[in-house]
Image (tube, rainbow, N blue to C red; front, top):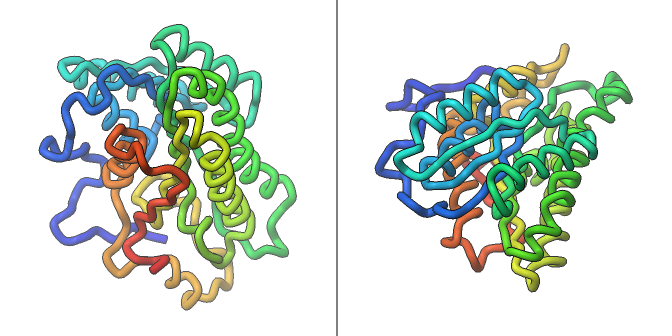
Amino acid sequence: MSPTTRVGESDPNRGTAPEAITPGRYAGHVAVVTGAGSGIGRATARRLAAEGAAVACLDLVVDAIEAVAAEINREAADAGGRAIAARCDVTDEDAVAAAVSQAREELGHITNLCNIAGIGGFSHTPEQSLAGWDKIIAVNLTGTFLMCRAVLPGMIEHGGAIVNTVSTAGMKGQPYSAAYCASKGGVRLLTMALAVEYMARGVRVNGVAPGGVDTPIIHNFGPPEDADWKLIERLMSPIGFAYPHEVAGAFAYLGSHEADYVTGAILSIDGAITT
């Protein structure tokens, strides 16, 4: 699928407009952001830091997260934001434990977790390999679980907020996406289960469900051979794709004290795809 540029928009990589930032909203917060090397993860890490958070940027691509951390330390210092980079494979429980421990030791008690790391792609289901299925489930669903499990003990003690990436694929059936839909449907119910389990213990858990977003991952969703374009069109909003900074705004809201009464919610940002 090719991104569609919206009227008046030209640069999908630009940051949040200054007037949209709430100065100090994240002062004193320590956030862990997975998938922070690019796309929504990068935009979210930068947004939280611009509002005062100390951010641990997690990703597999070390050069990318080091660049994002450097951006934050250069641009957000005056706002009280700062960042560190930590390589992490979210499918590896030892790597997750190490990254969370590093974040806690270098930045302090973790108050926020944004699970944004994810993979996906289109395939006719009879052609979907088991290895490909396992990888999508491992990154999107198991990775989200492992990150949540790692931060929950500290959040139960000190309070906190988790925001998971659900996707419209977790909200309705989508063609050529059996593995991706299964993974994101799992994340949606994992989010709701944790919200119910921990709502009386000071931990809020919510989800963001983006539709098409102009990020590098979108280029993995090339239609399979002989795809039915009428089905593909079900996935596309007439107003085009969202931009990363727009989705980052939802993560910033749901993780903030402005949303203290919001838990178990899934916020769709999809140009009315699921309406």
